[in-house]
Length: 242
Length: 204
Image 1 (spheres, chains in turn brown, purple):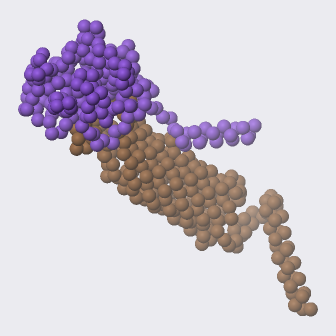
Image 2: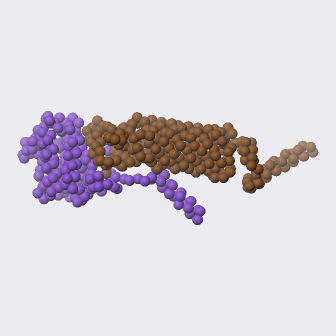
Image 3: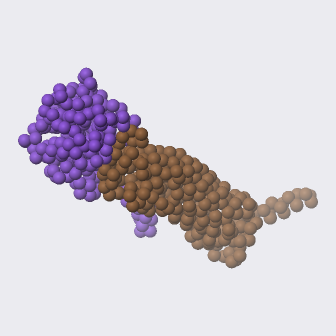
């Protein structure tokens, strides 16, 4: 009998707690101000962040060209994006995840002489060139969240490492001088998640990162590089789920 | 209303993410900005072995393999300017023009080829209007030819060996189709650029 009463009490108490959670979650206006932090601090499990972002790329140099003599690309690129997913563990402070991004840099260059177009064979081109470079970094992410239980802001630091696929083009009318290559990429990033309201599932993500890629390429005598470096500003939308 | 605004913002953002604000070749600039001067040469060419050349007094304009027309320099100011400029550059580089093809060390084949012909037969080999079908020497290049509405003005310098025309130098000018788009002075500038880019031709 005692055992039966004990089982009933346990069952009831679980039911009350569950019901209380549901009521409180459905009516956030009734929550005490410190409820969220209490709730999250006691909540165990993995929190997942999925982000889709617009990525703006800023070259740190001329991407292997020589700006004043034989330019390649030094313009900021607005054509870029990022898809990322992370799972946060250890009280939601440590994040592990993956991301794939892309940035398409381009620049119209004035009429210039390009020597050594064909490497060891003899070829030179004079013309106004349309320079184009696309980057596709695929990275593993390791993040540290500074305020994982904050109802609004959750700043973070992320270190991304992985592979970087790039194509470089120099287009003159119907002629496309191009190459493609793979490299290793390291990219530290700082940023923050901003919830759209207290404890909202949806939020914004703003991040600023630096990318160092070991991609090497050669298009002409004066357009070649042993590495590619650029900065990223990512502005996006994040869904945070438990 | 809110949903419609969100949709517009989403479409706008996705468009920028994928395309940015691109310009592609040929979309802006003057006709001269669209002209491209290309020089390709045999890196083993030895200028000291050649001193005379022959060039016809006209060019072939080819629309496709079976549609070609010979235009004499007296019929077109553009053709005349092209041939004069080639002569001037060859002379500057130390070559002497001869009128007998058998006495010439080198022969020059000028022609104008439109995009259809280019995409079908160039650069692997094509029918030469002067000396028959031949294959040019191979180019191991990362250069690919796509289909834009441009033509190619070619002048190839080479020597006859049996049935082959061995190209030592090829000057190629990509230009917009339609002669009205390109002035004579622009064509002359491009021919000069082609020679300037290949100092290997210089005998001096």
